[in-house]
Picture 1 (spheres, rainbow, N blue to C red):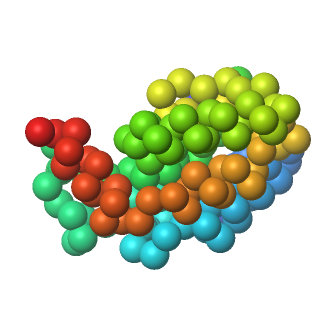
Picture 2 (cartoon, rainbow, N blue to C red; picture 1 turned 180 degrees about the vertical axis):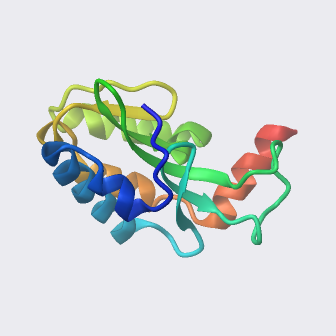
Amino acid sequence: MRSEAESVTRYIAELPEERRVAIKEVRGTILANLPEGYQETMNWGMISYEVPLERYSETYNGKPLMYVGLASQKRHMAVYLSGVYADEELRESFLDEYRASGQELDMGKSCVRFTRLENLPVELIGKAVGALSVDDFIAHYEASRN
C-alpha cells in the first residue's frame, strides 16, 4: 500500500488510529537510535531514513541509499532494516535476539512485518537501527557492488 503523502506528518495523519499509534512509537524509537547523518524523508511511498545524495551519490539508481524504512502496508506494518540485510554478523545477532524476545518473527530479507505493536520487540529495532554509522553502511553498499 504505497502512500502519496509528501510529508511524514501527513503520512502518519492518514493512518487508522491503531496503526498511527504503532507507527509513531516505532518512528520515535528509530529517531532516538538513528546515527547522525541519516535523513528522514518520504520516499518509496513510506517513511524512509536515507543517506542523503549530498553525502553519497554513487548509487546504482541515482536515489539515496535507504537505511531504514517504516510503512503501513495493506495487511501489516513493516520496518525495513537494510543494515541487517547488508551485514551478516548483524543479521545473525538480530535473528538470535529476536527469537530470544519470545515474539514471532515474520521477516523477509530486510522487512520485519508486524500487525500489532505488542508483537514487535521495539527495543531490538532501535538497537538494529543504531548499529551502523553512515560510513559503515556506505562501506557495506560499496562492498556489495564489487
